[in-house]
Image: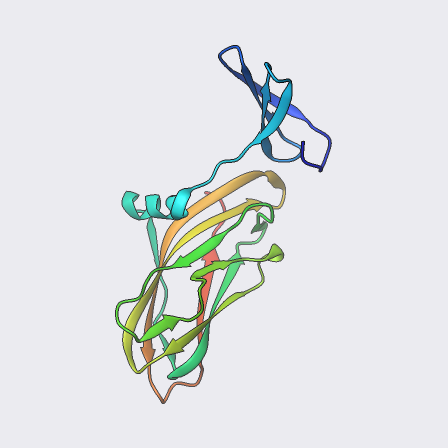
Length: 188
């Protein structure tokens, strides 16, 4: 079994006579006990090819359309910042991501191999390099956000949304940086 906090079982499920599934709440993992081999392993769940973000697009998730931004042509940055309502914070134990879609045209291009913004602990801004060419476009991305109330940190809130940022690339602009500021409201 992986190192970490002591094993704490808060739920048990059985699959036939061979396997028992338990929720290891101290380590936020699902454990599988194979009764025939007497071994315990960790059940790993993944969303292949960012399937959770794909599901939100298919299901008509909320769209956060941000105000138009003006940036200068040339090398620049896309800086994403989360701002939470008072009493809320990023869940540091879950990977909140903003995955940028392939843009239409060449007005704004995320450079490098990674098209996904993942916020570090504390929700500091996350940046990706970009190249901008004169013109207009809408930068689009899929947000998967895990956050919680400070007073109830054990209860994770999940927000799925599409993010749209209209951009004008113009020599007269004052910055090379696209600022994506996401205002996260509390629970209703």
